[in-house]
Length: 581
Image 1: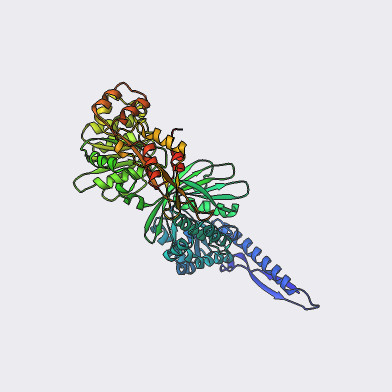
Image 2: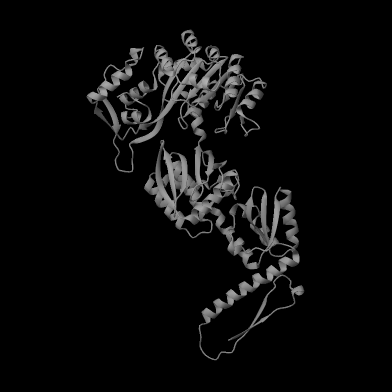
């Protein structure tokens, strides 16, 4: 068989540049399938060569889409019918910058398409492609049904798909099996489906965080459920790289930055409403570590009466949060539920007659009827924001966190001048609030007039009612419990019978026997005796001794009561807070 390639002159090419004629003389049998494959490969290679020559003629950069991933988020910016008519397709998108693959620059429909895209605010980067490249992009349109929409700021999935996965992924094993199936799919859009499965599984397991942790030859996926991390799956480097790019695009961070930390956020549309995702990227030895924090707005709808606050403390707080001026500070480590507690208070006291303004870093939950602002680096700090907020005539101010002396001073001044201030601090207990404020440079003489409540909290896992069992206390445990309750002024809060506690009784190895979490709380209320003591900046242990006289439970006492009542286990309380030996 002989092949003769016939080219017309370059200037006469109407944009189907390569023509082929085949003449054959059949002398003897041979492998026609192999020869056809070679011919096809030669055809494709020479077509790309000609398009490269034409790219110089038209002054348009050349690209071969067979060597690039076509981004679904870019592809969605143009309807398939419009793309085929214009012989063009979008294949990459970063924010409002769109890469457009063009096969025929002289197509009249292309001018209309470009005008439409620029009118929508896109900045276009045009590339010349072969017919074969363009067909690869067009083929991707058939794969877009798995995710109805995915763009910077929001990830929307078909409700039926998400509902199906949520129903199925009730266990870690089922979740892992579903991920295996999704990762093995041959669909060009399988990364979107993998990400859908990850989100659906996280929702089904009630996870608070999703962790991607690259290692030497794989990337570990872990979920934090009820405060504990659990291994779920391992991804190969290629799949993780694609997931990394997808999450970066959704989060609105820079795709080409991998050597420094970045923070972003996006929303996930579910059938029952949107869920906010806060995303953190940090560089590591084997790639970027990614953590997605799930901020379910349902958390803010929880009543303060459902948080686990003891009835006696709750009754006092109901009065304190309605003061016309003062300050309530809640303390605890990251992830101890401080923000949820403050939001539940804001929801309780919010009404059309009062104005509430918050300054947060970042805004975690959006509340209707409340003005929420977010710090922005050095341009709009907590201190600067507080100065501006005071001029907005608010009744209630919430400061996400008091981190420095200037913020502490302004917050205290606001509390002294007719505003009620809610805020958080990082300390171990309620008594440590005041030494911490002093360390930040606040004047201890102002504490008696400004700070009305100091709270501390932790979260403990609650026992699954169907998977727990009662057991008798040991002598050592009885002695420890007696030591914990000994300083309590109000002895009526101590149960009459202290003989048994409850512990988890899971049905299999995968179960923990716990389901959900509840808070342990303590609070100190300002009075004349405490205000006098604080003037001399006493240590936290002296403050705690005086606070014990107020008759409210400390965290250890609150935890013991919940363990005796079967709400949680004694071992869970001991793992969360220090109990005496």
